[in-house]
Each structure stands twice: as structure tokens, then as C-alpha cells.
Length: 140
Ligand SMILES: Cc1cc2nc3c(=O)[nH]c(=O)nc-3n(C[C@H](O)[C@H](O)[C@H](O)COP(=O)(O)O)c2cc1C
Image (cartoon, rainbow, N blue to C red):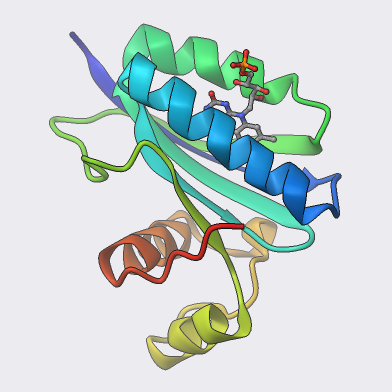
């Protein structure tokens, strides 16, 4: 089995927190079944997601996500083979980028606001790892 991971960002088209909650609920359920793991960061305007799992499952899921009308302008910034998972045990770690999360990002010199098109791949990676490792995740 070839293990891969992918990172993308996109523009959020829904302002309804319940809609984001629905995305997280569906993702947790499906990803557990499909052996996908990862994290979703979001604010009012943006989504940033990392997903990892078996290559063919991951590509199929990305195609589904790309067609989702709740966001647009999806840009895939990374797709690569990996030796092991970084988000084992996380079917989907949903994190709203609140003022507290922004402050933590500032403390460690990461961009405070989700501006995926102005951030480097390393910064996106560091943000995601920080919220997961430090338990900053606040579900929708
Ligand atoms: C930003 C974003 C991220 C998503 N991430 C996932 C995901 O990781 N897993 C998943 O199953 N669906 C995800 N979805 C939802 C899918 O696009 C799709 O609605 C869902 O997989 C359909 O599942 P269902 O057939 O069980 O209803 C995401 C949607 C958006 C807008």
C-alpha cells in the first residue's frame, strides 16, 4: 500500500458554523471508514486541509472534495508519498482559527491570519502541526 499526503487550501463559501460542523461530522465518519487521517483549519474565509492515507483512496476523496459547492478556488499545494503518517488517530482534527489560536501562531512567529495564498508550504505545515500537537483544536 502506498501512503500519501496532500495539502490544499480553498475559499470558504459558507458562513454558517453549522455547515462547517456538518463537514467535520461527515469527514470524521467517512475518514475513519476509509483509513484517512488529517486536519482541517478554517476561519470565515478559508479552509486549509491536510489529508493522508492510501494513495487511491486519497485521490478519490480529493476529487469529491474538489466538487463540493461549499468552497471554491481549491489549490493543491502538496501531494507526495510519505513513509508514515503524521496525524495517526485523527480522522479529522477540525480547528477554527480563533483569536487564541492566532495569538499562539504569533508567539511562534507564524502568520496569525489564515492567508494561504501568502503563506509558504512550511508555514502551513507548521500551523497544522502546532494546533494538533498542542491540542488547540476547537470543533466548529
Ligand atoms: C473543506 C472541505 C473539506 C472536506 N473534507 C472531507 C474529508 O476529509 N472527508 C470526507 O469524507 N468529506 C470531506 N468533505 C465533504 C465532501 O466534499 C463530501 O461532501 C462528503 O465526503 C460526502 O460524504 P457522504 O457521501 O457520506 O455524504 C469536505 C468538504 C469540504 C468543503
